[in-house]
Length: 208
Image 1 (tube, rainbow, N blue to C red):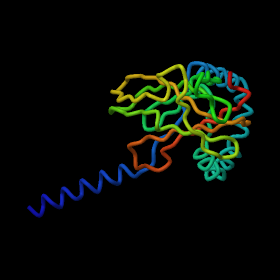
Image 2 (cartoon, rainbow, N blue to C red):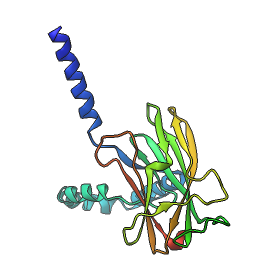
Image 3 (cartoon, rainbow, N blue to C red):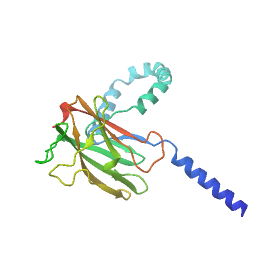
Image 4 (cartoon, rainbow, N blue to C red):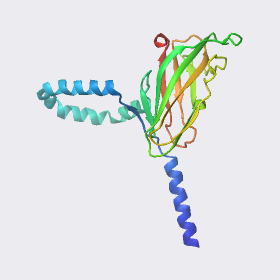
């Protein structure tokens, strides 16, 4: 009996440690990004002799910058159209626009920021996504509220339990003031892992 309890405790500790590790966050290349990478590889091939001459110095520079690169990776900021995977759940802000205000529910801050988002569960397990996992801040760092006066009743109302390989989409709207840019954060609900967060920076000039 004691042996069974000990094994059970070890299993529980292992599960807790796994749940409290770091999330795997990485950008997912789309077709245009892969094409650009292929073109860059072709150009690099034509100047391979120069690359070889700089190889040794490049390796030393790479080693000296490893700490800096890790820091930059943690602070990676994405934009409209970028697909980012967090533990296998791929999240994309497909488009941004200024939303329509309801006739009897004007936006308190004067503007409605509309975000169209999509998801693809590329992990080996089922995954949950919900509109409450997003938050938005203006350029001054002020949190903004969701806008619920839209004529489109499907905004800010999605919740999906996605099986492996399945996709879904949703629409978010926020009551925002004028700002040079907005920061959009996505953080999964059911996670205890560190760095389980994605941030997109949306410039006002890019909003349609």
